Length: 226
Ligand code: C5P
Picture: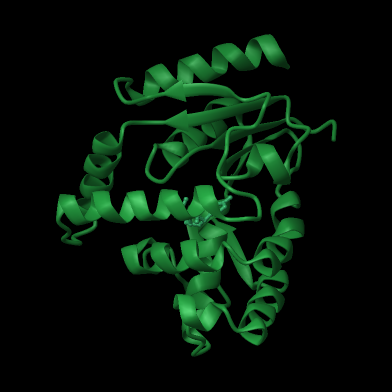
């Protein structure tokens, strides 16, 4: 627990991943994109022929199987790439449909428990920047710095739109906004590890901030806290 962790939690498309990567680079720390783990699991389920629609997830057997898959997920981060077994899934996990499936399966307690040990293994020297929904509340509750990152819904939809377009995916901004809001509502209302600001987290709204401004804000907090 002496290994420093900075937690960046917040809603979908608030810029957590970008901020976490920039901070990790600046500090020479490791980085954990916890959302990628839920996405990889969703992809693994899909490839195993397991349905992940809401009705299927009500079946305790499906939930149990997903929990077992989570606990033994053959995932690897390597040089900016993400691997499931021997396949490079860096691009595949970013699809909007995979994000939605990840959001559905992430509400299952068995899945969250299954991924816990894996996430904690990322805490290695010299330190870790972890981004997600429950980094500060559940996974690393003793972290010395927790940031709750938000941005307006319009800003988030615009950023997600730009991300998708850069990858050649087409999407309507209105439907992205609806998806983002549906995902946030589900993340906030689930019984286990809901998206919520930790009591000791510092809020940061980056709607009108550049990435560099957000990085400087958090680095300033880090100097005071550690
Ligand atoms: O952050 P990202 O969009 O990649 O996460 C995909 C989904 O995984 C989220 O919508 C959320 O439901 C879930 N998630 C989670 N807990 C985390 C990270 C992601 O429940 N720590």
